[in-house]
Amino acid sequence: MKYRPHIDGLRTVAIVPVVLFHADVALFSGGFTGVDVFFVISGFLITSLIVEEIAEDRFTIWTFYKRRFLRILPAYLVVIAAVVAASWFVLFPEETRALGRSVAAASLFVSNFYFWQFSDYFAPDVATAPLLHTWTLAVEEQYYLLLPLFLLLVARVLGRRYVVPIVAVSLLSFGLSVWGAVRYDSATFYLLPTRAWEFGLGSLAAVAGLADRGSARWRGIGATLGTALVAWGIFGLDEDVVFPGANAIYPALGAMLLIACAEGTPVGRVLGARPFVAIGRISYSLYLWHWPIIVFWKLRIDPALDAWDVAAICALSLLAAGFSYTLVEEPFRGRTMRRRPAFAVNATALGGLALAAGLGGGLVAGAEIWGGHSAEVRRIASYVDYRTDLEVHPCLIHARVPGQDRAFDPDTCLPTDPTRPTLLVMGDSHAEHLMPALEETFADLNLQFAASTGCTPTIDVAGDWYCPRVIGPVLREHVPRGGIDTVLLSTRWEAEDIEPLRDTVDYLLTHVDRVVILGPTPEYLTSFPAILARNLRRDGAHMTRFLDPELRALDRRMANTDWGGASYVSLYDLICPDECRLLTEGGVPYLADYGHYTRASAREIVADLRAQERIAVD
Image 1 (cartoon, rainbow, N blue to C red):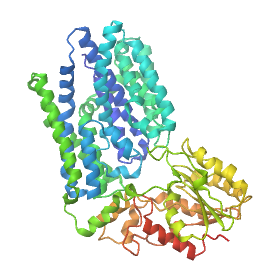
Image 2 (cartoon, rainbow, N blue to C red; image 1 turned 90 degrees about the vertical axis):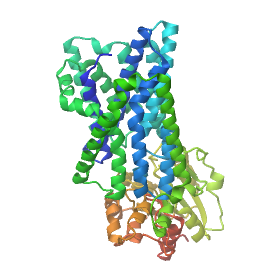
Image 3 (cartoon, rainbow, N blue to C red; image 1 turned 90 degrees about the horizontal axis):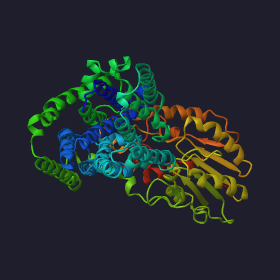
Image 4 (cartoon, rainbow, N blue to C red; image 1 turned 30 degrees about the horizontal axis):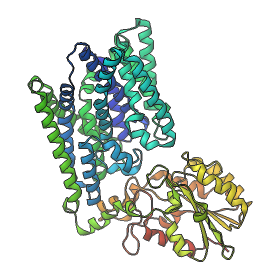
């Protein structure tokens, strides 16, 4: 297969934004789209290789997998082993269990399914998942498993006319991605069926021979357009956009155009320059190493990265990638290993993966004895997995989590009792974490609760697609029926919620006597129990550096807003007047993750709110 140096350069364009996005460099707000560029490159290269060998009647499945194993597994397994070794010094038992599960999933190339079930890629808590980035390799391996069979089938049935089948499958995958990105965003982000079209664009460029067609003028236009599309993905998108879906067109189509058109153009000459090619060649190792380095740096040194931290992380990542490429990748891709029989290589590879999966299982089973931590550190750290074991309130609807995608039940969640004052609580999980304490402390009230994760309790019902099905009917149908004395609104507020919230308050006050707004919960940059356990010897002032500074500014803005008759309660004033409360009177961490209260801290907060008459219902 013809070597195209501009594709190595395109790998650099993909990996550098990924690294800088993960290092929290704000300029690269869409750096995560570098992964989409990699998917297109993989589709082009692998399809080109398979189609060429099918045409020459020398393609075999076993030799193909042998090459894939030699290309991917050595560095992959070395990084997994290094992560496990580093975890002894850094991770706590619950984090070690999670690592063990992810090691097993990564070893079976199903980590995309694992993280789909347990992690939001953009959530704060993924900062303790050093193998999160292996989801992309799982997607690629699943693609490699299916693509040869698909191309062999097409070659046999349609006589090597690949274009139409690839276009058909890609269009189906793209349609599914656009539909799913709005409704099932996590599954759409992590799973192959909604990512296959990106590989398909690369495959289409390969089978249609696009990289060897077109006049110099049109190739120059295509390369320029491709550059603009990729750049928009990197600098114009951010983690708040709907993704992948239609927004993934920018990096994916841009990468396809650059692959097909850049050779022989000014853009191609830049991509083919030595610095671009050099980084591109180590891009696989750089991808493998950079994320664990960032995770352990944040856990051990500083979660809020400054310019010096970013520079050090980039230097360490490049150094590790260089050694990995030279000492691990190249020897296994040399002639000696290529001459080994496919059966021997594949059997050894599968054995190595089985050992890695067993190592993951061992971490899960032995998490309590892994690592050298004091008893008090372990006690605090045990709350890292606190919310996983909690029973979710039946009136909190979560359409993205299996078992919690039930329909909202008004009879259960909105009971009526004319003999007692009624308090209606609305919001998301930041309302739900207070509900058990509200039910205990305000047992003399008739409590109603309507909440859905990721939903803002406003008239325009901001949030995911299922929010209007829960919040909308309660606001527009239930509230006007009367019988409600006070409405309490609590959610993960953002600055853009202020104006819709003012309109909602005006609307509510035409139907109820009181409206109480609970301000934003103080949030930490990652899991609070883990931060606290790692900083037990520090004072509260030190812990404030781990707080999200934007939320205190939002709280001040909301506190100074005229709410037209509603009461605003600042949780910052309540629990962070100077230094934030860290432990309850019983020694329980105040937060269970980045920003949800434990049951014990919720009782203290609600008790304070009642004692101060901040929630008054006559």
